[in-house]
Image 1 (cartoon, rainbow, N blue to C red):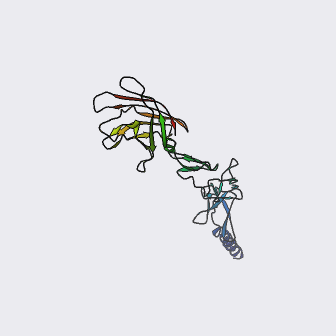
Image 2 (cartoon, rainbow, N blue to C red):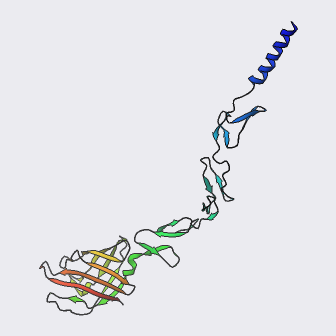
Image 3 (tube, rainbow, N blue to C red):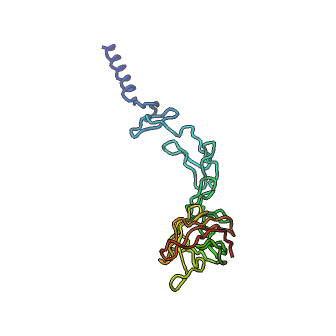
Length: 242
């Protein structure tokens, strides 16, 4: 009887140990909870089944590791060559105007039809380089002779960033005013091409173009027709800013 009692007591003790032991996965059970091995963390059931992607991940003093194991940098900082948040982001709180900032260098990349001012901010319309009054005498008549010295003015209309307006084109009269046309600039702002005449008496050829050479010089070419006759004036030459 004594041996039976000892046997039952041994089984009871063994059950107390084994029945209270929990399967912790990549961990051990101690004092009522799972203690995970290095590089592992608990799931929703308290077992060590999820890899800790931030284990041994050093994001530097200006960042923290997120649940995907990636470094998230503090505002004003970016990930450098070391993989840490140790590089200042010069784009932080920087306004590039009509452009976007390239992180972390802080360099502004301008939208089409804009360029940088002296501070490196995209505030200047590229078409503005054409704006002003220009003078030249390179106008060939139907007989091929060069005739007169002409001034014309270029302005930037508000309704379309891609267009410029040329007024008083070579003193050609159109009804009660002077010949005016619109032409479209390229996104780089070095050329303008195509033409839309505001005067039916003097249509302008589609090969009309202006080329920006330097701040004080442009090259203009095209053809203005005289009243649907097929004849007119070749506009080709170099014009200087006044």
